[in-house]
Image (cartoon, rainbow, N blue to C red; front, side, top):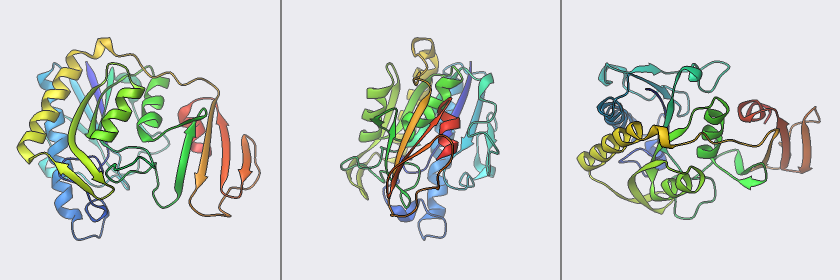
Length: 258
């Protein structure tokens, strides 16, 4: 089995503040160790569970967060700009893990909750249902017939994943108290949980189905600021001064229209 791991930063163990996930902030450099440790724990679990190949995509911000010289050598890694595809090479994989993910924008007491851009995006809907990055990336994976087999993050992100993805394994590494506060698992306990969940997810992958998003795919976005709605174009419908809709043939193509 081949496993594709998308790793974000807000849901990584040990992280609960904005200053930890933003380049140039005083806590960011230490957080690069935290995300690397979580990735290594996940990679270990995947291989323990029987994976033959693991590819990790650094998907937070610019994609330069992982410490390359400290990564598990058994896996492959994508860092930096991934080009025209959000998940390059996905068609050759059997299952996906969303590691270090966070709850959708507006989720109460969720650690660093947002959807795609905390500065630009207020709310987001996928085919009429409120959604976040877990749904977006699971939907892109589903378009390639790849199921999401595991999600890690806080308790709110894990609950969101379970509502959306039947049979998914979740690794709850913290409980959200506020946007910048959490009850954190200790380092070793969090890493053991991630490894155990990844191994279980790989062993169980045949029981999880890909998320199928009804096509054509309609996305509605409410922006934080007024007067930022794009001008009129094909497949775009303006709702009001800060909200618009796009329609695309699949999830990734619709996302590119926003």
